[in-house]
Length: 265
Image 1 (cartoon, rainbow, N blue to C red):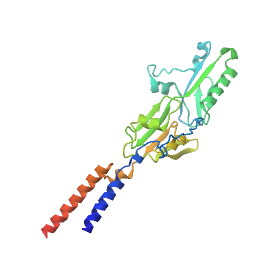
Image 2: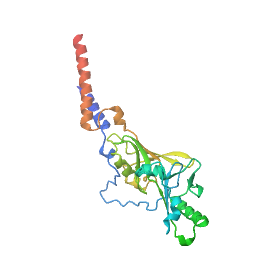
Image 3: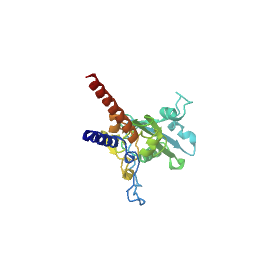
Image 4: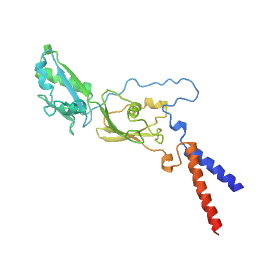
C-alpha cells in the first residue's frame, strides 16, 4: 500500500515539475502587488555606430537637381528593381576597412560613426569641393533597414529586414510568429556585432525590466536565439494534463510488462 502511495506521489510531482507554468510564458510581467507599474524607460537611446557590412542609403538634393545627379547613382544593372533589391544595387555598403565609396568624393571612412555624423561629413566635403552655400544642398543618410536573424524556438525563424529607424526585440519576435510554448523567454540570447568582434548578451523577456535593457532594441546584424526549455527535451508535455497522460501511459506500460512477466513465471 505504501509503495502505491509513493508511486502516486511521485507521479504528481513529476507532472507538476514537467509542465510549463504561466510565469514561463507571460511577457513583461509586473510586480505581484496588483498595482500599476511605472517603468522608467530610457527615452534617450545611444545612437547606433556603423559597422562593417552595413548598407547605407545616401541621397543629395539641391535647388538645381541636375548638378547633384552624379551623387545619386541609379544602377544600370536592374532599373526595375524595387525594395531591398534596389537598395542592394544603389546603396553604399561598408567594406571590411570601414569605408564607403561615393562618386566624385571617393573613399569615406565611416566605421564607428553615426548616420548623422556621416551626413555632416558628406555635406562638408560637398561644400568644400563642389558647391557654394547658395546651392542649398540637402543630404540624407539612412541605414537601409534593420537586418536581423532570429532562430530557435520561434514560429518563423530566418532573416528579416525592417525599414524603420528603431525596432524592439518584442516587435522582432512578433514579426517572426512569436516564441513557441517550449521556448525559453527568460534567457533570450542576442549575439551583437561590435568593431572588435561579437559579444553574447542575454535578456529576460518575462520581466517588465527588460524594457530598460540596453539589448531591448534590435541593432543591425543582430542574431537572436531562443533556446528550448528543458520540458522539450524531456518530452513529458507542456501542460499538466499532457504530462499526466504521458507518464500514466508509461506507468501503465510498465505495470502491464511486470504483470505479464509474473504470469509467465
